[in-house]
Image 1 (cartoon, helix red, strand yellow):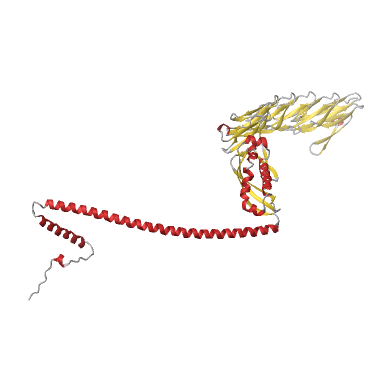
Image 2 (tube, rainbow, N blue to C red):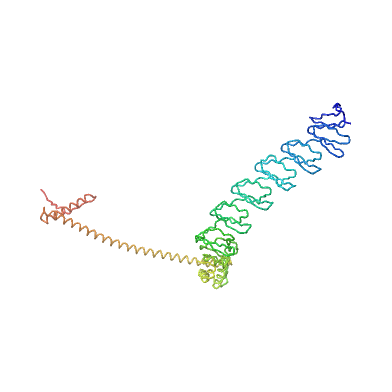
Length: 535
């Protein structure tokens, strides 16, 4: 029987205080009490019920009861609760106290997601398959009861694209792609994934072009229009090309889609600078290098068409079986580029090997002594008498010189050095004697020329003196004639005028002498002196 309502409460239940505000409920006479943060779970034979505190409940004798705490949720916390009978789930989001239902089970308190302005999160609903995207600064983000974070990374960072950047994005639901260009802060959609990393847009200018391929049609195109280039969604960048520049003396080969070769020369203004067309490539030639041309790894794309030197070295035998090591140089030039490409893939190797075979042929017909006297003549015959081999390969040999030779055998080399030393000494002595003779001859020629010069000087002085005297006489005669004519009226006698003229001329002479540091001597006749003896 239930207790009467007038019964004292102290006989119905007792409350024992424990600790700081905690309490233990003691069931007395079938009554159970719950605080504000507690609930009473009552199980009967057929049902289970809960009563949220604060409350006081009477429990029948055949029923059992337990008390449990409510679950407190903070502002950034949430709780997923599952109904064990129906399997339905719900989300409880703080701040609040959560009282579970009679058949509820929780998965534990979880922390909500907080996003800044550059973050986003994507939730996948396991029941419907839909994806929900929550962008940054949306407050506390809590997944739905059937949702989970779609990405392994959890919270994703938005993609920061500068004005010269772009990224390729693919929609995984329908397979379509798009190009996202900067400047923007890119948040991916529900089914979007980035394809690769961010890429730099390409600055196309006068010296830069881009070769792209359309992935749908497979066609290639060369973009040369000046711009900040970003490929279309169906395009991929195959290559960024730099403008190819050729100097006046350079040439190159471009091979097209059908294998045809086109030749470009820097001496032609229209071909001096260009971009490689689609489906084409510059032909790279591989030549031999080294003095003996034993290594073929010299790779060239631009060819120097000027004459230049190329050294060589090889062994040969004379008629008297002396093995020589010849060293020399070619002065050669490419004059017909198409013929060279048609006839050989190793121009330097062919030129040197052919010259070596001709040298071996020529040297084998002469002795060592004969070779020493005419090796330059042999070198000239090697390329002059077989010019067609080089011209067929588009090459012109301007000269071929043997710069040095030595014996491969040491003993023979010592003998050869002695011969060369004696020959050198003899040539030096001859040169010294020729120099002495030449000096003497030049000295003799100088003395002869000096004497001739003295005679010419003397003749010139005599002729000049004669001309001077003649001019002075003419001038003196003119002065005398003028004097006589001027004094004719005053002095009628010609002889008197002449005597007066002589006196005046003596006076001029005296004035000239008196103005210089000189002495004047008179003869008795000139002075007209009379010596008398006086008593």
